[in-house]
Image (cartoon, rainbow, N blue to C red):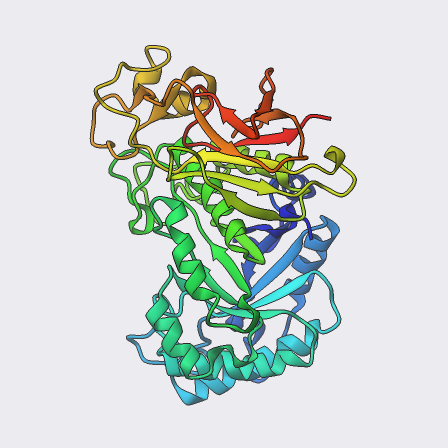
Length: 445
């Protein structure tokens, strides 16, 4: 599998025009969507998948894989407590869920390019006890075992390790092929690496799925779903680094939340605002551009190999990745960035054009201007400053026998005119390129 095939996105529609699928596929190779239990079993004991069959055909026609989420409850057939609107802790509801999962597995058995996930944020919206979750997903997983369809879960909100460990002890992963989580709230994104190492211990083979991750963009003070909105370009930097972090950790899939904004009204600033990588009118945002660049620069690579230390920058990342089959003379490439924004001091001079000092997006898009945005100062004042990086930039050692020169690609997809060279077994990234956004070093052959 190529790295780019692991990139997916949350989708909240059951139909789209081919042009929208074509736009989406520039950055992603899969979509993740609810397969609504009440919609499938609107008449208790009878299952109708016609709407979801149509979505499956649309996605496969667009050469996209599809992840269907079996989640929440069906109160029309299995009444639950009024205080637990999305949960399913009652034994009758749990058995109904297992029957619904068995019908789903039987219906889609033999189909390709479709995956299934057990539950969505059971530790939050679903309000599932670890015991109920283990019973639901364990029973549903047994139904999927004979279908040859991948079935994983439980897509917890954030890395809720104690909740997952208790659920695992009660048998959650006995019939699941991977553990899935939502990687929200990791600042900086690279901090999630420790949590991924803990997740690997929960399921056989250490298989993991990053089901949702994202950073909303919007004006100061806007907090969609309780998360602080960031300038759009900063949201993009965090998002692409979150994706690279997940891939480095070895996830099978990494899904962005979400495809498009539900609302473009900043004054509302509700849960649907700001999370999309495109606007509600399908206009690309910096988040989309950064993920397209990742897809174009390293999407054809089979794997990220390892992290290399950067001299003098313990919080810097240099990730070696393997070449596409038959490309780059067989030499490896690198993706490099700094996870630390502290060098962007408020005591430095404003950066870029006069408007850039107060425009984080313009600042961050100017990768060769030596500019950076201080994400730790969003409470007023000019956010865009000259970086205080060392004049010699940042260096890391490479193995002998690799490529001697590299084309440099930027976070937003641009190709820089100058090459970087291996000198004394190391590559030095100049200070004008070393910053919070990843740059891609591809062997020049």
